[in-house]
Length: 104
Image (cartoon, rainbow, N blue to C red; front, side, top):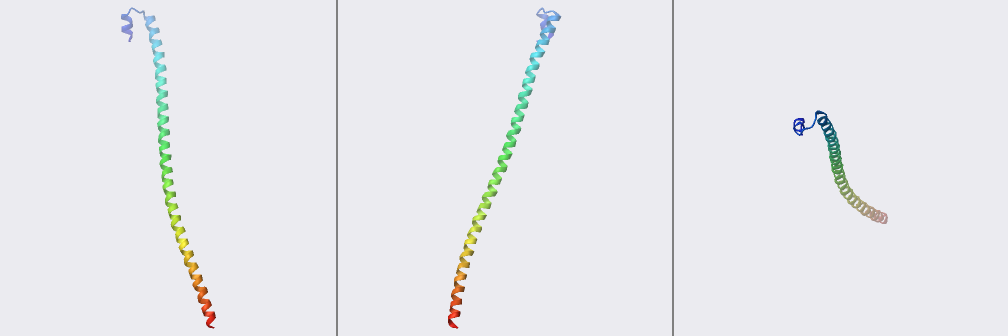
């Protein structure tokens, strides 16, 4: 309602001033509550964005670690193969040395 409508209802200027003041206080409380809720929503949205970014970073780290684990498996297989070749070489060398020593 505006002042003119209140005047048409037969209220005095003093009464209109009181009604308008009370209305202003009530609407200010609503504006303040709305502002706080808007800020809370913004904070929650920002937190959600931050959490999503952290999740994405964690997923990237997991993929990198999985790749490194695969590389470690490959290196382990290569090491096993090299150890097998070394064992075969040592055996062949020992046999060759024995043959050489036996011919002398």
